[in-house]
Every structure is written in structure tokens, then in C-alpha cells.
Length: 355
Length: 264
Image 1 (cartoon, rainbow over the protein chains, first blue to last red):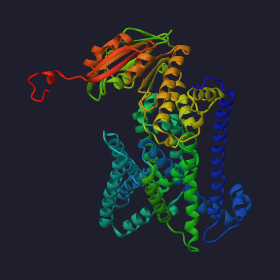
Image 2: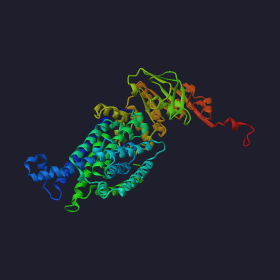
Image 3: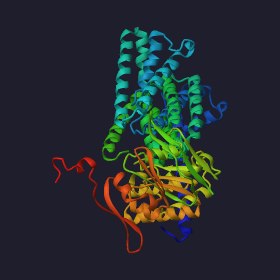
Image 4: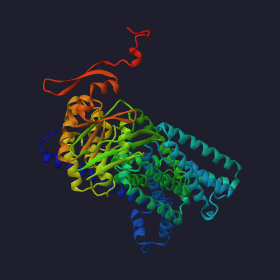
């Protein structure tokens, strides 16, 4: 053992840690700046393009711009732009926590079938007009989506807890769930009326054009509800990444935190999906970008995952308007096209390293 | 002064009572207790029960500690975690469980001094996934020490360490036990190290306590034959230190029968 009192070494460790923490705060701040820019561009671009300054003025002081700009910015583009941010943030946060508690780099609401379950739940409401919870008829689509997402989440949770279940088993289970719910969805589409079918197909593509202020508030409320619960367990959730035994030895109630987290994840994944349809890969890519940049200390990992997901979807929204002038592609199509190569690279890199 | 005694302690693993009826005399601060026994004897299960991680009958009596649940800290056998965390962060994590997000200078100073004491400052900002088995064990020890427990349960802390590191860690634990007034239980397979570094020993076999007392009184030729199934001598070396010299694997009663067909 080193016996000399190495004050210099002690000072150095503390200083390096503080510097590391500051660097991470700067990364989060950088994301915030990029997100603001992307949000503004998202509002400025569309069939008619506005100057960024006009958009900024319309946001900060709506009274000082023309009625036309105000209506386009506040009533048409702002809900879509905000919905992109909130949806990206929610899905990325859900993916981050799924990856954490399942110790699985491929976990996300989309890859493990939670989005597919939510789609099926929503389709039950759209096609059959049936609410899974009888009194929730006003919010039939989101409530059905949430209930089915919850069912899928609990299936994954309980199976992943069983003895001898590996990371691969959970991924295979997710694939099975995706196929099952897609088959059930196809059945509903087959029996649906023409109008309902159109509605379901458009819904499954994932599109921000369905955004309304009411949906934004509900999705934001879920995010705001989830954040403090995750934040409260930040140290415990990080410890779970060291292994169940190690976390338990630190005094973490692993079982309770896992279940609690999965329930919140179901809510986080289901609500935005029920409003804007299936948007894949944000929940997978967002957390990976965050992990590469700031590591897995949840105090930094959580905000960075949220920011990365929000930025990713906001930027995708911009891209979806830029491919063909005057045409806004459903955002779900773009995220899937961008996400698939990333997904492949992740699988290939996992061949070489365990995570 | 902190004391601990086990009273008719048992532990359930799933629904099965795998450890039972463990009653010990009182251990006091300043003591290192070796917990020895063959593989799968129930040493880890006993530790988990003592740390409150498993349920079971009986009681763990701790006196003289004001740390409540944090009085006992368990260091599990190495789990090959591959979290994207630096060594420094993983130790901070152990320190901060159950407390606020804010990291004080006091927290960091403690981490630095523990890392310095076990000589791992050079890997402070390496990721956990890049560490060797031995380095992981040292990090595990640091994680346990920064929690400042009164009673420390170490599950094979030296199994992946080279001889130099083993001596360092065990020497260090001896110092820590004395200076911090702790009681340390070490599950260990190297009985020579147990005789050299521990004051007392508990022998666990098939989930039951086989013997407890001063280490050199507990580890006997008879114990090695009965529990470990080896024929060995225990002799003092030229410096007076007792050493186990293993002669052979003990023949079981069946093998020793003269009528056995293959008996030479």
C-alpha cells in the first residue's frame, strides 16, 4: 500500500472529477443550444419559409408580428415542433431506463414491442371503438395504447426477472412481441372500415401533424411526472448498472426500483406513441448517444438522453420537411430510415464488446 | 466499541433454507474473522443474510454502532459489470447511495484518500469495462470502504489478485481494522493467508457452522481432512509462522476399504 500521504494525488483526483462533471454540464448546455436552434428552424421551415429572426420574434413577442406569421407559428408549426421535442425526449428517456434496468443495450420501446403493443391498443379504439378501460371513452386511443404498452412492459419485466434469462432472451422476447402485436394489428386492419383503415395506417406511420396543444400538455405532464421519480433514484439506478448483487450491497432495493421504473417507462413510451403514432429508434439511439458522451451516471445520463432524443426528433422533423419542397413526410418513416443503420452498427459493435 | 454476534441464524435462498443454526460468540472491533469452507458451503449466503439481503430465521446482534442499516457492508464477489462509468464514479456511487445529488468536497476527499490507500489512483479515470479481474476487486474494496461501515463482509476479495496484491490488500485490511475500529469478515480459500492475517475463523460446511474460534485453533489437520478432504500437515516455518503443507487428497472411507477392487 502507498503509505505516504499523497495530498497532491488526492487534490488531483478531486480536481479531475470536478473537471469531468463540468465538461458534462457543458455538453448538456450544448444540446440545449442545438435544440433551441433546431426548434426555431423547425418552425421557420415549411411550405412557406420564414426568416429565423421573424420566428424568434413571433415566439418571444407574438403581438409584434403579422397575423399570418403569428397563426402559422403558434397554431400550426409550434404544436408540431414542440410535439417532436417532447416525444423525442419521452421515448429517449424510456429507452435509457429500459437499457439501464434490463442491462440490455438493444432495449427500447420500439425494439421490445412496447410501441407495437401501443399501436395495437390504439387500433382497437380506432377500428372497433372499444375502450379497454370502460370509463375512459374520451381518451380511448391513448388509454388503450397505454394499457397495451403496460401489458407488454410487464411481460418483458417478469420474464426478464426469471432465473437463467439472458440479454439475448429478452431481445428475442421483444421480437416475438413485435410480431404478435403486428399480427393482431394486421387482423384489425383487415376487418376495419375503409375510413378506419386509413386512420390506422396513417397512425402507425407516426406523424407530428396529429399534434395539438392538449396532446402536448398531456405528454409533457407525463414527462414532468416521470423525471423527479427517476431523479430521486439517480444513484440507485446507476448502481443497478454495476450488477444486481453490487447494487443490493449498496442498500438498493433492486426489485422495487425495477418494477417502479418499468411502470413509468410504459407510461413514457405509450403516451407519445398513442398521440403521434409509431416513431421508432429514437428510444434506442438517444440513450446511446448520451452514453457515449457523458457515461452512465444518471445525473448526467438522464438529462443528456432527454436532450439527445429531443434534438434527434426535432432535427428529423426538419429533415422530413426538407426532402421535397412543400411535402412533410411522416416522421416515423424518416426515423426508421436513419435508425436502422445505427441499429446495425450497434449490433456489429456488440459482437466485439459486451456493451 | 462495536460488537457482532450471530444467534441461530439461517438464510433462505428462494424457498430453501440453505444456511441454518449459525450461532457465534461475540466478535469485537479490531478483529478480522476468516470465513472458510469448501465451495458452495454457504459462505456468500451467510454474508448476504448478515447484510440483510436475504431473509431467514435467527438474529444478527450488533451493538455499539450508530449507523443503523449502514453498519454492515457487504462486498460481493466480483461481478463483471460493463457500465460506462469511470472507476472514480463507481466509487462515488457507493458513497452517495441514499443521499442527495450534490457531491461535496468531503465526499471526493474521502474517495481520493481510499483510492490512494489501496493504490489505484492510476486507474481512477479508466472505464470499468477496461479493468482486469484484480483491478475490479480493488475497486470493489474501495467501494466498500467509502461507505465507512463498522462491520465489513468481504466475499473472496483476493481471489483474482496476484501474490503481491494479496499481501498488500490483506496488510491494508489489518491496518484499517485497527485504525477504524472495524470488524472484518473475509471469506477466503487460501488458508495460509487466513492463518497469517486473521484473528478468528468460522468454518461453514453444508450451510452449518462447523467450528469457530481463534484461527490457529480452528484450522487443524483434522479439519483439513474432514472438511477439505486433504491430508496435510500444519508446521511452523523458520520464522515461526504456521504453514499448511498439503500432502495428498484424502481417501474417502469407501476408497480406503481393503476390499475395494481397484485398491493398490
